[in-house]
Length: 95
Image (tube, rainbow, N blue to C red; front, side, top):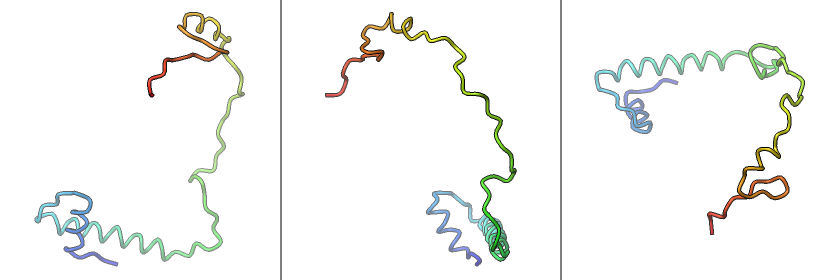
């Protein structure tokens, strides 16, 4: 598949990109190269190849899920204007 200069102008208008008339030929050539690369990649037989989630097959280093700070909820809520059952109460702003 290759594009025409009319296609480039239409794509530029749809993408709201200003392309100077002098640059249309260069843009057309670059877009056609990209489309050619896509066609080459589509021609490769990928049957039997499993999709990968990531290019590098590694596992994440995970740390143990443990609390590192002491619970200070009572201290923080002691200065709050309104608290109920451990929750901060705020005034209603939407009617």
